[in-house]
Length: 283
Ligand SMILES: [Zn+2]
Image (cartoon, rainbow, N blue to C red; front, top):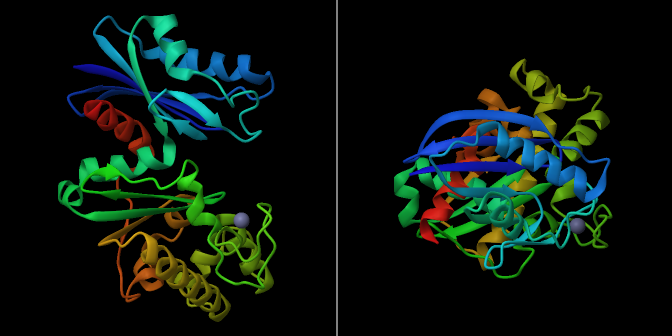
């Protein structure tokens, strides 16, 4: 069964043909964000048309934003994808291509993608934390996403670590995103006189200031995991995202010995598409 999967983000639309869980072909196209919804749709169309073949039976979508997977509709998207809020994306696919379609939030899809390539995760309670331009995450029990509220994937980033901490654009103070996003880590490193995206290279060289930054990341991660665990008890925490990729060999120094089983994400760039594919098998 050949399925065409796409992963729609604010920068790129990734696309892939997956046959029985194996990628046959992948491609990437830029997301058009300066023409409102028409631009976003044209990017999705280009991504799909580029790989479409008569064997495709379904289109599986991993997407930024809050997605109501029951209806296949975008409930909320930030201005990074202008006009996208309210879009019936699976309805559009059905009308345009005459094919079945499913849609799921990209954070949820990334976790399902990790579970897909690590079979023992499917019998466990697993959280995923993504440290990228923001801090996101997801929770799965026995291979299925558990979401307490509609905006659940973003919630991990807005758990307050410090009641009197840094102000967040969500209106609260001390949110995890202000301490653990790639941008926050760069800002912290800057205070120690370390250049942008240099902190983990400096850590490898034994730079004492970089060690202080790493200790802060470690402390804040421990605090966040403790708070997440209270509502979402987990066996394994998978860490992914650009900031984690940048850690390279330092990963275990930063996240080891925290009292949790913390592991690195392994599915890489294709995790979202793979997760959307596996999500469609359940529908
Ligand atoms: Zn916040």
